[in-house]
Every structure is written in C-alpha cells, then in structure tokens.
Length: 65
Image (cartoon, rainbow, N blue to C red; front, top):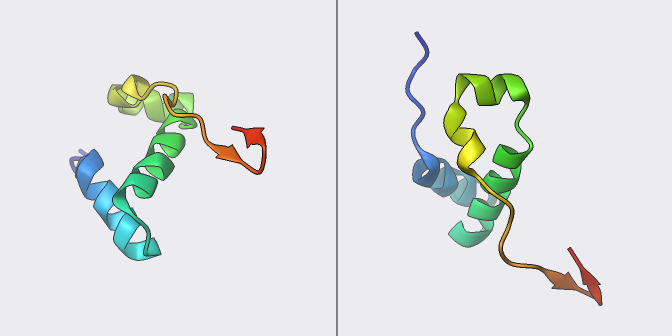
C-alpha cells in the first residue's frame, strides 16, 4: 500500500521553501499541477477532482490569463 499523501498545505509549504516563493504562489503552482493530473492519477486519488478552475484572473502586460 502506498504512503498517505502529506496534504495540500504541506506540499504547498514544501514548494514555497524549495523555490523561495510565497505560499500563495506555491498554492497556485500546486493547483495547476492538480488540474493537469492524468486520469490515472485522478483514479488513484479522487480528491484531485476537487480542484476547480482558478477564480482569479491574472493580467500581465495587457493580456489576461
């Protein structure tokens, strides 16, 4: 049996400390990865399906993402 997942907050903190960025930005990176997870990964971890579309639009140099 696989080890239990450490949780969203723990992974978010790990990303922030490793990359030297804020926890908000690390959360955005983690959410993006979760949204792009493979169907096989979502079958193994159904909670990945809970991560929805981003609610905040980011504007950079006149472009909206």
